Image (cartoon, rainbow, N blue to C red; front, side, top):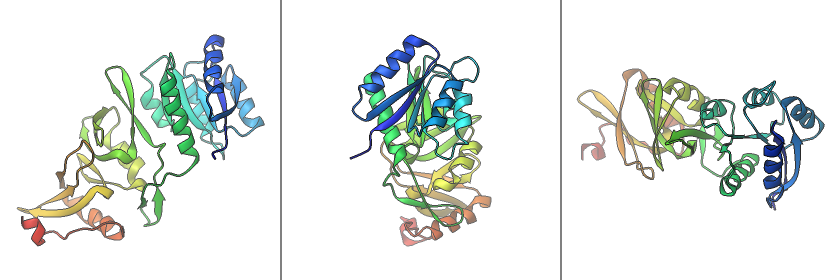
Length: 271
């Protein structure tokens, strides 16, 4: 049985803090709820005991919630961060500091349940397949790795391990995931850097792909195409591979023992 979570609720508005602490306190997976009315008090609580998760307002006097979360990245045992805010325009900033979830006020209990599930998942490595890092060593995905995507004023959290490929659209990126297509305000180059060690490879100036979905490479009229198998709502696709990226893509696929790569020009490619 999972150990009950020790959580810290942080909000500078007393009524909001009372409501948040109440909702957290009645959840069966929460063992104890501590409170803080500002970042200074929150740091005092965090230095006094080991906290599993911080449920944190963003707009506060002194250090904002985003700034406090940045401070927590230096902790040797960093608690999971869940932002609780009335504003829906800070999701990208929340992603930048590694938040596991982003709740909008007023808090719905079903969304709080989901946030607590994500916190629990962040405590324990997920059982998804291992992928190799840049040195060929095993790295493991966790369910807490999510990308916040805005759609119609609602923030959708897209798990990274559900994403098959990413397409550049100017300063934005379009995520093609098992649940569909999501446009996020994050450059493709940023995702390339962050996800390089989690099984993603830049194959072209416009495309980033998940190696786990690659089924083969095909050469046609001198151009190299990479094949990706279907991924939930995302159908099978072939994407162009630049000359500069082709060798590294082949090397990474060959080094990954889980990959079954068909050579370019095989009989299957001719079909």
